[in-house]
Length: 253
Image (cartoon, rainbow, N blue to C red; front, top):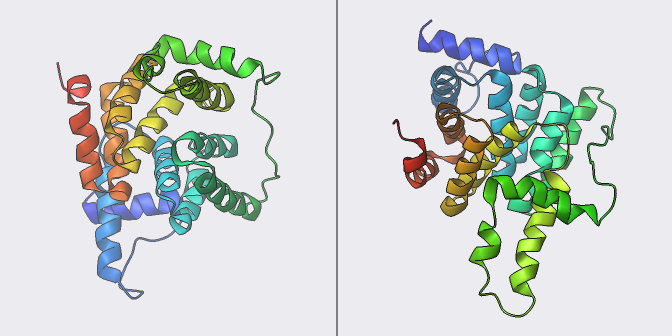
């Protein structure tokens, strides 16, 4: 297939619609956009449509772009993503982008679910029996992959914060969210890498989570493929920043 044929095929698979022609106010721009994302990037690397849409949904949630997120939640369903997978991808963004932006994304996501006749609320995926479980169960996930990195890094904080900040991270990121079922740890970590890259300015955390993603079973190629896939949404500079930050982890041996 040539580039135009690839673009048309991918648009049909994901959106059940034709690639951009001469219609609308900006046909040239839409042809460039679709050609790059759906004609080039979507055919480069090993990730399938389902995983690519989870990556796109995560990136758009991080960037807070509701119209595009709405289109890609629908594309995710078309690509075979389960509603619970989509919800978990959005939910786990909260510790990184904050609750308000995540709530906006949840609202957009639920609009699409309702339009597709998906009953809400979706089944619960939390596994914590009590608030007291948050730290211990969170630490059980955090420690094997990240050790005591955060606690060691912030011993200089004044008063109670030297203990509170690392504890909040363990309880919220790993206790409240990573103990949830509905998405495996390999996918969670890969999406976290993309999320942090999309934010920009979080290269230290990108590198830490690339190392974590590799530890839980992602390959170097999958990590690079995920970041390259996100580039059409987050921009080329943020792709390069993420790749440069992780060169020693991702370079061919």
